[in-house]
Image 1 (cartoon, rainbow, N blue to C red):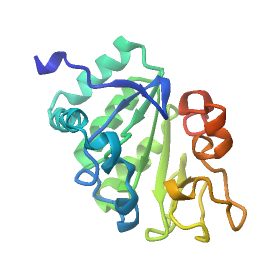
Image 2 (image 1 turned 90 degrees about the vertical axis):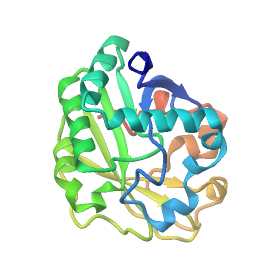
Image 3 (image 1 turned 45 degrees about the vertical axis):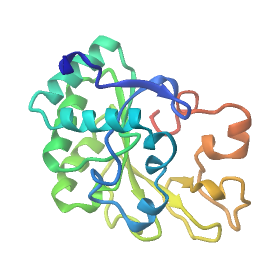
Image 4 (image 1 turned 180 degrees about the vertical axis):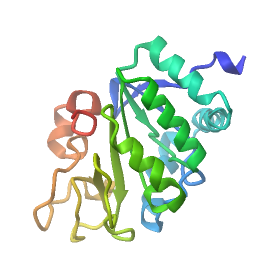
Length: 219
C-alpha cells in the first residue's frame, strides 16, 4: 500500500495552491546546516511538530532511500502534471546518492520546473552533483547562507545565494534575503537585496505567495 501513497504534496500557506513539494524531517537530513539556521529553523516549530506531519516526513525519508525513488517521483510528476516542484520545504539533500536521484528526476522531467534551497553545498561529497543540477535549464538552485557560513567561495553557473538574516543590523549578501520571524516587521538599518516578498509586510497584506510571485522559480 505504501507505493500507492503520493510522494508529492500540493501547496501550503506560503507556496500557494499550485506548487507541489516533497519534504524530509529537518535537521537530521541537513548535513550542511549551521548553528544559525538550526537555531531558527521554521521546520522544527508549529505544524511541523504535529504527529501527522512528523509521520508524513518520516515516511518520505523512508521512500527517499528506496532504489525506485527516482522512478516513482518521475512517474508522479508526469501523472500529476506538476509544473513547479519545491524540493524540500523541510529537510535537505542528505547524501550524494540521494542528490543523484533528484538529478535523475530533473533530467527526466524537462517540462517541470524544480527549485530548492540547500546548505549541502558545504558538504564536499555533494558539491559535484549540486553543481551539475544548478546548470539544468529546468532547475533553480539556491545556495543558502548566513552569518556563520558566509558566502560560498565558488558558485556554480546557474546557482544563486539566499541569505538568512537573524539580526536587524547584520550585514547580508547574496541575491535574496529571508528574514527570521522577529525581523519581518523591523525596519532594516541599511539597504537589503531583494527580501522574500511573502515575508515583507506589503506581501502579507496583498497575499503574495510563491506561486503568484515566482522570484525563486522563474527564469
